[in-house]
Length: 280
Image: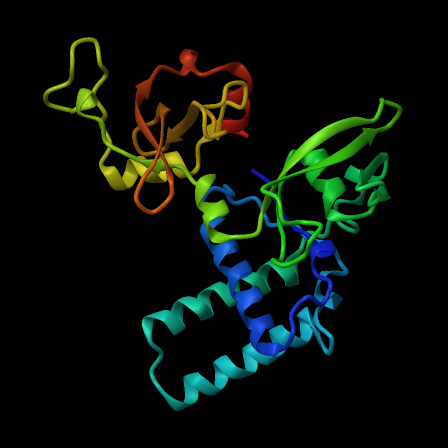
């Protein structure tokens, strides 16, 4: 699954540095939340991202440098709390994203060179929105931008000589949006390893390992449940050398994650197009 930081959503909407802190901490929370389902694919961004404004006199780059300086001072003066350690981990993760890229307009420019993209009748062809349209990716946007407040945004996308077509792009601006696309494993009695229901295949993974396989699974996008999530996801566990199917329960747990139960299946039960993605 591809994620892209939406540089167009950074327009200096924070009133002051304190509000900028809140907005950026929200971005960090979202990035940290989706890191497992990113399946080791790097989070993409635009080369102009760090130069975008958070507030009138503060760019993303300047904010990052101030945070790094603050973290170093804390390390010298006291033992960090669990919350501070988590914040530092999230900051380091974002720094890694920004320092290594890849940048959609430089490293992956070949992907969008022959593409055109329009949002609200504006040409955004060299932006992360084009990358999201091309890769069927998900945007991560800064809050309080009136142009990017919806869970899904509609763009007009064209590749090479094909016709312009409408494409819907998922847009994460709140942590609850991120949780909605992060599947959570829920054990179902009918797949009990010792007492399975009749004709039900026993689940042979612990809850922790099942969640790990589910987090790195590939969704079948052909069918959605009433909440907009895929009804089926397919995963592979290297330890057991087995494939697994996870079925949506069309519900959310108490933390806001969509729930799935699962069980092992034969390789020939995995759709070919899904199998290619799992093995790639």
